[in-house]
Image 1 (tube, rainbow, N blue to C red):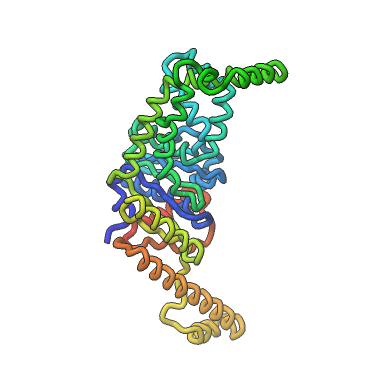
Image 2: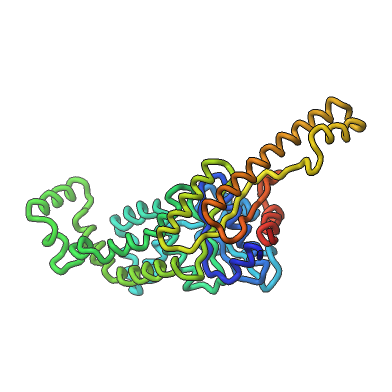
Length: 365
């Protein structure tokens, strides 16, 4: 069977999902590196606030704009990386959709917009939708690899486009945008008087800010809705591939099954499966006693016996991991071979370490 990097070579978007602590961010970066080595122009995006992607790429930090990792691959391949800043992403959408500088500045400076965009920025799924559209439609990347938050809500962005469209096209929003103004449509004279007193006491014209905000936003909502529709379609196109990243332990494996079920319910094709931190056997054809006997001449009986017992314990873990992977693959009915990444001696902290993982992902298993 082909390597996972080869199977993903023709994809436009690769979305890595999985629980926390299974090496998902490292896998995302290593996949991007493996694809870039194949001559593609690849951008990997993380929405992980722990900044592990920057560390894995040997950088101190990443910004909301794609940054080329110089020297990562030979031409014609290119590796780019960025870390999602959801608040900045929404600001950039306003800047791109509103051509009038005065109206654009009015929206960005509006207190209601600042509060709403700050709250929305906590929803990384919506920010990821916006940034995914930008990278796929407005940049010339061959592949975009998206890292996702480490939670059971990692697939919420599958539903996020429809939720956002429901709001943008819903009757509730039309009330705010309808002719006659927010005051006339939503509040009676008594409420308006209360807001007026509130403005005099606090200096905050909440009602005025709301009216100005929704009036200014009316010019960009159609463009925002159109982007959302295109991302919703993109997530279900043949060029989009999901990769479930897990480890052999019970809880991450259970999470992997949950994610696979969610993808199936959403009508997605079966995802690729990467199992990280897998223990490999070390005894080989030797038994524990045979290893101890082979080492005793050089190391002495006591030290040789301790090494042999440790090796036997490692092999016990290796057999457990093998059973776990076999069981998980069987439950998921996985057609492609499970990609197994062995337990590494140390954490990936630079391009050299990332390259070793990329080698594994680009090897036939």
